[in-house]
Amino acid sequence: MARYGIAIDTTKCIGCHACRVACQNQNDLPYNEEFNRIKEKERGRFPSFSKEFIPLQCNHCENAPCQRVCPTKATYTTKEGVVLVDEKLCVGCKYCIEACPYKMRILDHKKGIVEKCRFCIELVRAGGTPACVATCPLQVRIFGDLDDPDSEISRFIAKTGAQPLRPDLNTRPKIFYKRS
Amino acid sequence: MPESAWGWLIVTYLFLAGAGAGAFIAAVACDLLAPDWSKSLARAGSLAAGPLVAIGTACLVFDLEAGLREPWRQIYLVGNLSSMIAWGVIVLSGFIPVAFLYALGLNEITFVGKLAKKYLIHLEILGSFLAVGTAGYTGILIAVVNGVPFWNTPLMPVLFTASAMSTGLAVAMIGAAILDISTIKTLSNFALGHVIFLALEGVVLGLLIFMSLTKSVEASASAMTLISGPLSPYFWTLVVALGILIPFVLSIVEYYEYGEMPKFLVVGADLLVLVGGMSLRALIIFSGKPPIIV
Image 1: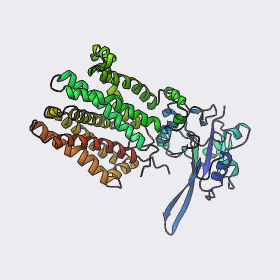
Image 2: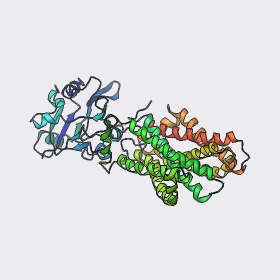
Image 3: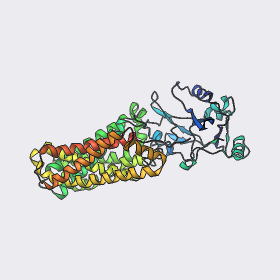
Image 4: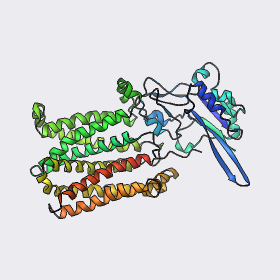
C-alpha cells in the first residue's frame, strides 16, 4: 500500500495562493475557510533579504496527536496513511484543534464538525493528485508514495534533504520542505 | 483575546468541576474528622458538589457542536480510551450520581436518602476517589496537549487539584454560612485548609511560571503573557493578589483569631478564592500558545 506525502520546494513558491483557492473549490469551502494557507516569512536584513512563502496544510502525521486525543475515533488514518475525519462520528469537541501543534484543523460551524486537508482522497484514489498539487503553476508541490524509493517525491527528498516542519515534535509529518 | 479553540464554556467547566469535586472532599473530611460542630459545613459541601459538577458538565456539552445538535452522537464519546475526554466522561458519569446520592444520604432527604445513609461510608470512599479523579482530570485534560507547550507539564494537574481543593472548601464554607450563620465562628477551624491549599497552589503556580520561562520559546511566551504581557493585569490582581495572597493572609488571621474575625471578612476571603480559581483557569486557557512551526 502506498504511503502518501507531499514535498514542497519553498524556493520556487511565489505566493500566488492558487493552491488555497483550488483547495477551497475542491472542498466546497467558503472564502474564509481554508485547509491550506501560505505563511510569509522575511529572511535576512536590508539590503540582502528575501521573502519566503511557506505553504502550510495538514501534515498527515504518522503519530497524529489529533487522532490520539479524539474521543469518538472520528479522526482516523486510512491504509494510504491519509488522516481523515468521519463526519458522522465527530461531535465538535475541538480537542483535536488544541492538540494539533501545526494548527491545521478548522471548525465548520455549519456542519458542527472539525475539518482539515484530506489529500483530496477521492481524486487520488481515481489516479489523480490533490487539487493544490495539480493546480500549482510552478510545480512547487510533488505528491507521491513515500514508500516507493523510485517515486518522484522520494527521489526529491533524497536529493535535496527536504525535512518536515518541527520534526522534534515527534509527530512524524508526511509533508517535506526544501527551504533553501 | 482567546487564541484557544476553547472559550468561556470550557473555562467555566474546568472551574465548576474542580469546585464541586473539592466541595465533596471538604464535606467528607468534615463528616469523618469533625462530625459535631462542623455538621453544617459537611451538609453545605455535599449539597453543592453534585449540582456544581452537573452544571459544569452541561457547559461541556453546550460547547459541543454536532454533538449538541445531534445528542445521540455523545454515545461515541467513550470510543477512544487514549483520549482524556473519554476518561473524563467515565469519571463524571460516576461522580455526579455518587455526589447526588451522598447529598441525599448525609442530609437524609427522601427515602432514597434514608437508604443511602446506610451506605454513607461507602459513598464517601468511592466518591473521594472519583472527586480526586474529577479534579485531577481537569488538569490532565490540558496537560496531555502537546499542541500547547505551556500546558504540556505534569504540574498542571497538581495546580488544578490544589485550586479545586481551595475553591471547594470556599464553596462549603460559604454554604455553611448560608445554612447557619451562627456556625461562622467554627469556620475558623477550616481556615487552616485554605492556608495549606493556597500555599500549595501558589508554590505550584510559581514553579509553572519559572519552569515555563526556561522550557521552550512557546511556553516562555505564554508565561510572559501572564507576568508582563497583555494578560498580566488580570494575572497579578485576580489570580495572585485577590485569589491567593489576600485570602491566604486572611485565613492565617482567621485561624489565629479563632472566631473573632468579622463575618464579612470570613465570607469575603472565600469569595476571593472563588474569583481566583475561575481567573486562574481562564488565564491558563487563554495564554496557551501553539508551537512556532516555521
